[in-house]
Image 1 (tube, rainbow, N blue to C red):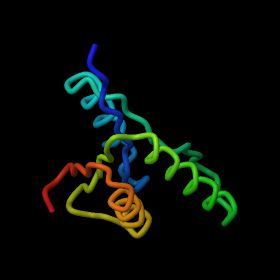
Image 2: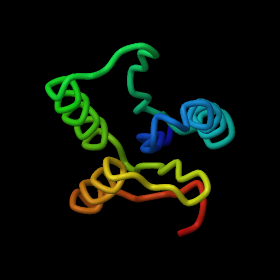
Image 3: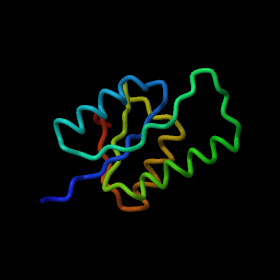
Image 4: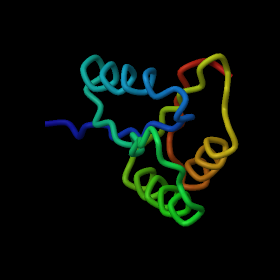
Length: 101
């Protein structure tokens, strides 16, 4: 059996719906193991400690992955996602994008 490609989703939480759709598509159509959906609390303001922890956890997900998939709807890539792309590049991970850049 071939090893399945492990992919971490990266993108703005404002694209939550698109990220869920892409998760399903990459899993079913490509047979990828998809990780990376960040916990979403609709009425919670994350503290700086929370944000640091979530960033650290997301980098750990990238470490476990073969690639990242950037959800850049309408070309949007925010500051956090740019940092995740730089981290993935530093780690030699494949980088895929929803939209060409």
